[in-house]
Each structure stands twice: as C-alpha cells, then as structure tokens.
Length: 508
Image 1 (tube, helix red, strand yellow):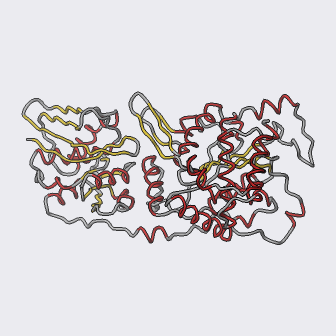
Image 2: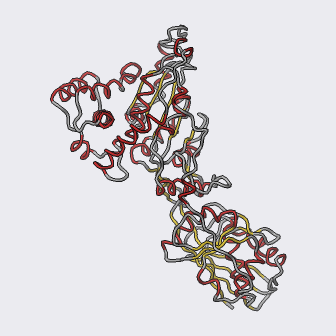
Image 3: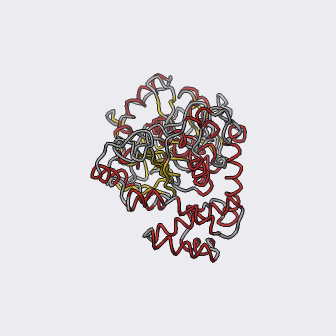
C-alpha cells in the first residue's frame, strides 16, 4: 500500500515542500531510501524502526520503499524521521491514510519513540504557509518558534504513540498558541548603557552617527582605551527591531540551531564578536551544505571585529561583498545559497603592533616598517567600505574619577530614532542612509554652496575614491538628519570629512 506525507526541505533559508512517499509491499524485509538523502537521513531507517516498535505499533516485516520527492533536491538532517514513521503507519493501515494529508510533519525520533526538536523549524513552517498548508505537526521543543508564523495551526507532539492516537481520532492535541506582542515586550535589564563610558566624546558621537545611519565604524587606539566597551554599547542605541525584522533574525538563528530555550523570538539587536582566529567559513558562512556565518548571525545588528589586523587576510577580503550588498552568496558543489547580511560592522585595532603609537603616556617601540606592515593588513578596498574611522585616545584620570555620568543610551536612542524616521520617510520603510544607491545619493544629498566647496577641496586633498566620496556624503546626510536639516551644510560635511582622518594618517 502507498502513503504520502508532507514535509519540508531547506536550501539556506529558502524552503520547498517534500513529499515523503512510502510503499509497503510483499517481499523479503528491506528498507530502501531514495531521493538524495544525506547520512543523517539514511540513518533514519534504524531510528524509525526502533521508534515504531517501542511506541506500541507494529513494524512491518515486508519490503519498505521510501522516496523523498522531488528526487533531485538534497535532503539533510533528522527532521524526516517523523514524516517517514507516519507514512509507514499510514501505508500499513495502523492509522487512517487520509488523516495526515492536511499536516506538514517535522521532527526527529528517539529509539523510544519520543519526538525531539530539530533546527530550522521556523523557516520550514513559513514555507508551509507560503505553499498553502495550514497545519504543522512539530516537536514540543519547537512549538513556540513555529507558532510565530501566523495562519498556520501548530500541533506540538511529545511522542509517536500520542501522535498515532491523535491521527486515529482517539486523542485531541490542542494547537499551540503564543502572543508575539508579549514576547516582543520583554526588556533585558542587562543591556550595557552608554552612561557607563567615561570620557571619549568623539567616539560616543561617532557611535551615535553610526547608529543613526547604519554606518560601519573603525576605531584605533591604545589597549585599554575603551574600544570594546564602546562597541558593546552600540546595540543599545539602535532602534528596536520591528516584528518583521525579529522574524528575519529568528529564522537565521533557528537554521543555525542557536535559539535558546524559552526565547522563541529574537527581540534584541544581535551582537556578534568572533575571535580573530575564526576561519572564513565561520565568519562568512559555508560548509559542504552551506550554513550561516557570523555576518548573517549579525543581520540587523552589530558585527564586532576586535584586533582587526589579526584576522586572516582571506576573512577580511571576504567581507567586502557582504558589506556592499547587505547579503552573502555562497556557492558550493552541493548547493548555492544566499543569506542576509544587513549589519553594522564595528572594528577595533591598535595603531601599531605594540599598541602605543601616539600614546601620551607610553612610547611606541615599533619601527616605521613594522607599523606599515601592520596597517597594510587592512586593504584599501575594505577600508573604503568603512564610513567612520577615528582614533580613540587613552582615557584621562580626571574622566575616570569624575562623578558625573555621561548621557544614557535611552537619550541617545531617542535622537537616533528621530533620524531613522526621517530616513524612512525619505527612503522607504527599511531605508538607512548607509544603504543609499548612487542615484539616491545624488537626489537626497544636496549640499549648500559652502559645503560644495569643502567637498571639492576634501576630494582633492584626501585623494578620495568615488566610493569614499559617496560614503562621506552619506555620513554627512546622517549628521544633517540628526540635526533636523534637509540640506547638508558645511558643518555637517566637515564632521563627516573628519571621520576619514584615520585613513589619511595611517594608510595615505
């Protein structure tokens, strides 16, 4: 007898409905699995056999043929255990073959027959909705994230035995429901606050500009100047994630298996800080079957690269295309996928190998050749993609000893939100100045006569590239938005130009 059950396969974040076809026929006992399964799927035959028996059902001593259609699409992971088991039960008449037709099944089986959680459930259920499927059976561990998808009934199951009784109509399973608005209202009191920062007024201002326009930032300064402390406070002044943005981020974390228990929805801006020994695959993404890397896990948030020159050269060069396009395309022999990478890059570095070049309290011990080789690890094309570049000097004692607190993240965030609102009215719902196209730069970055003269002089004196020219204008546009000005005045442009001073000092 033939039975067909629906499941989902993922290629990156894009899903496709899989028809799990099971035929049970007379013949010597065998279990044949076709449809481009990977090792985890092929091993399902042993898990399914033991789970069916230990759940109180009869495993047929006949020839079982399982096909995962379409057969030309790679299937991976243990989420096909549950649909294969359900199809076998339907094909052998132990459940009504019609009852599974309205559901999508996702889940891994233990040998005892329990249903275990799997990764990627959220994008799978979103694919089911896009294909007109209105109900999904998922593990209890994944029910909360699956319920974030509207218009799809989520039926959580703990074990195969209970699922069998549910499909036979002997027991009811209440659909799982959650309130996304209540999840979004959760506030983390441990978020680092900008009020903790002592001194560093220029760096604080640069962080505000970066947050307001979505600009990348590079900080150079001696050890202990507060570069890491400043970077960790950037997410706290960024606008709150919208529900749609939260879903985008949650999809990536679901696929990567990084959703924490009890936190089905990512409501905070991500902050990722990989170590400088991380490989290109870890940072950019990839693998035999491509998985998201750190730049995708930082989508709608912040990617912090401390000790930037210490990263491998191939890692730094691989950042160029994602920083420009806001997405990363990964091609492998088994698959080609695209992951989102709309992030703010914050990088920190010492000015020289010993870290004390320009330090007022300790002399630098590096030779000019050592300094040149050190900063040359960061290429010009990558530097071109970093809008804000500034020096972070050592903090003075009077700043540390002062009792007066700096401005809080909440106050800065209000100004950032007002600037972002101006950008949304100008560029659309997801617009940010850092993502303006060349045509939008020409249209919206209108300079006064004095600013035009200053731009002409800066372009000539600083030897700016065409990309750097546009990025200076984008930063100036953000500064004008923070000031509530529709036109870019000379003062706005002068501040934007000064954020290229680091490039002039170390690279030119």
